[in-house]
Image (cartoon, rainbow over all chains, first blue to last red; front, side):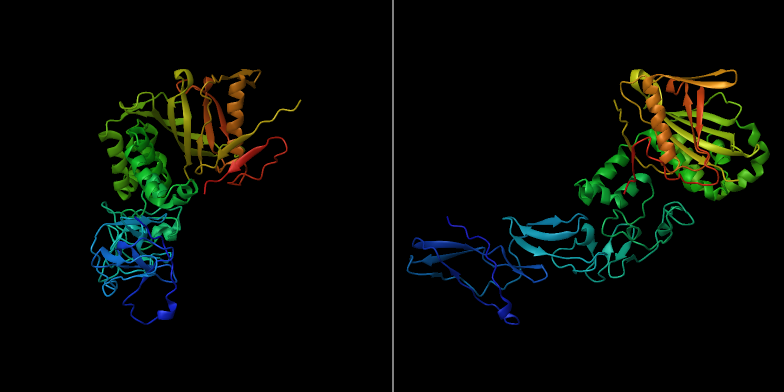
Length: 380
Length: 110
């Protein structure tokens, strides 16, 4: 059996004309007989790199060949321009973002391809609906369906503001990242390195890694799809104590501002610590906690309903609270949460209150060691 | 004979520190007070752990007043022995560090 290899033919001289026939030439000589010619993988290649497949109604054509004296095979030609494929199995090849760049037939030859501008503008769906970042593009509107919202690639913006299941003033906002305050933006305006798996902005550290850590993933030789999968697995594999730590950390970094800079009070009350010194602040605390009810409830759910144990430890003179959070599924792993006051050195007695979260794990020789320390100062 | 101490660490989130422990080491640390003078008593691996902690605090992104509690023998179940606090005056960011004495590489995650 003879296989024809890829031959690139410049057709620019036929621009504007209809190609109705072509010949395959025998240049090396061949035996007389009937030759099977396959049409399934013939493509036109645009100068911009776009592939357009040309299918034949008949996958093969049996062509008689008389021998070396005859140089051209007679090929059925009038069906070549038919764009309707007989076969339906094609294979998607994505780029680092998962966008469909190339379609190949079962035999491996390219039968279609697309190119995209950074925000996804480009092809309209034909037989392939899954385009930019492997999301489905609507034929009529040209919008990409991301699950929670529709995305307009021609504007680089979602068509509706982001939303969360629980009512929040600015869903998924990170106060240390002003870009997150724009509820219409796409991957915080980093479309070349970020993907949005579900149409919602990133709402925790792991998802941030998925959405915006693609740069790291790519530098490590991982594509976006793999990075997404790894990030999702990491989320699923997150241990209970890690969840509690993240909940507290989120509260410390974002919740503290909403609490009018009283994180110590709120965290202490959330954990049910015995904090008599705070009693006189109670009225103000209740108002603040009302203002961030969802956040506090979220932490409470994590801490209490997921089987955590909160143990009050002996407090030193500088501490207002000293609790340890554990979970029966993770023996030896602890979160130490302490609220304490330290004088500012050289300030003649002025003091600042702090929250410290420590993650403790069994270390060498089963010695419990602090492996992570996080800290926030209460603003004066 | 020259000794070389090379220590690399990645910049962590602000006011967050991950500690460096050797899997085999058995760090010892204690503080004694003699005539109002604190005496820091450490074994060698404890000294290295403390050095790494100090370098991280000096080079990392920490607010003034950031501190870590070090327990006796660096055992989290034992009482506090030493509190290391960053006090840099009014500044909230570490100043450039003189690297003539300690060679340390400082990376910021992309």
